[in-house]
Length: 281
Length: 317
Image 1 (cartoon, rainbow over the protein chains, first blue to last red):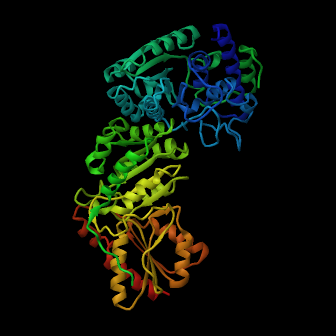
Image 2: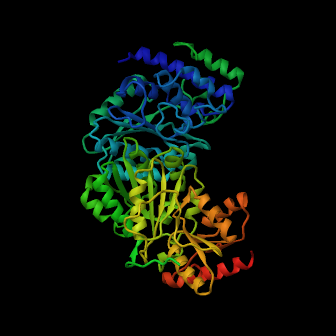
Image 3: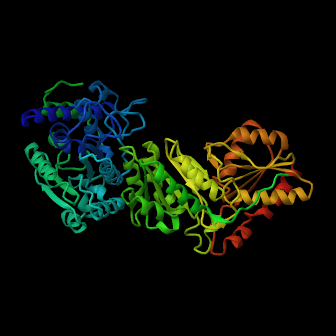
């Protein structure tokens, strides 16, 4: 078990990884990645029961599916720093012949990735399937999934949400990154989601809310409570209220950095705000 | 010429159901998913035998395809069942990203393909699905011709590691392939020997091609009928060997001529041995309501149409 201080140090390093990766190739999605850094770090370093190494079937361990694949920088950074592949490989993000494609894929065989994502709305369905496979295999471990909030505009999510409740897929802990932003503006401006909590509850899910979604203690508490409530007949969702661009002041509270890379000066300022902790790749 | 006997007309979808039932008994990793069409897809018996391995997805095909992709993670071999229209066009992006690009071992089993769905009309009669599916990298595309072959193919694809699109249909059609014939993916079957014209047919059009060959034989024309049950990967050698002898070819399919078997055959021929070819296929059109026989006549997809196409292509030699 990592201490909160250790997780915070890793989060700072992950932030550096994110903006350095995106800056190098002048493309990618830093905003949502930064907003979920604490979540990924806590999930992979403190919550998930993971085996050494990687195999696709993931039997005898918890598995995770990222549905909003555009936040690949945070996913790649945390996978590398959790031992799935060398951190030096973060240097190849979005480059030709890289295993670190713009959006996560299984196609290039990157350890830690179990499905391609990027075209939105598909991850929850895959996670439900994997959860059903775990039950058939008598594997008592948990399936985790992350979706964006804007992504909930995709109808397939609601097919999946209805299915999971109707079929008691209770070994599934989904998280929605409620940052209130999407490409064209705030989710309220683009197409308001209304009460996500009421919607999930109406569909029959157990809903937990984490108000401070960039606070490691709060995330830990939320995920721990979710684990306690899992395997009781209902799927569990955590509504994680995050700040897009968290940890770099000029990127926070705006959709402007959804899919935009920092320039040299902005990178330097971002790095200055997040001093090196575990060593840059 | 070699002739084939209809041992009793049956629907190809029942062949799928029978194959799935057998797989349920022989392969514990096989699971099945259906989007509210259990009876139409003949999945009742699998469901009754293995309720724990059967997933009723409801009328939610996108989620069904995604769940199937997820079930492979953990070693399951999912067979999804719904109509061909809802198995492909409705869920194309889900198949593309979650199944094909992700390299998942999902078997997409599609009934009621083509015009022979009949009276329900064009909303349900997909004639574009072969094209949609063959364009996906890594996807195997199979269109079986009768009950026995559909049953054999269903069993065979469970042993193939990778995504498969298996296309079959609704109506009762001649059942003429041997019940014990093993299904080999990508291996065309020579049904008749001939030297005047090659007929390459898939799905329901294979029996029509055999009927056409009989008519042609009465006219002194010998036709080499090849059953191309696998459209991708295509058995190019079987086609090239045959046209080396006959010097002309007719392709026959219950599908649009754009994107179908005929175009795959034309690509092979144009690269290796340019050969006169005629297409028995729909001509860039939607279907409509009617009985299967009426529709196949109106849209030129029966033995008569194949005979005419053969005479036309022979004249072009």
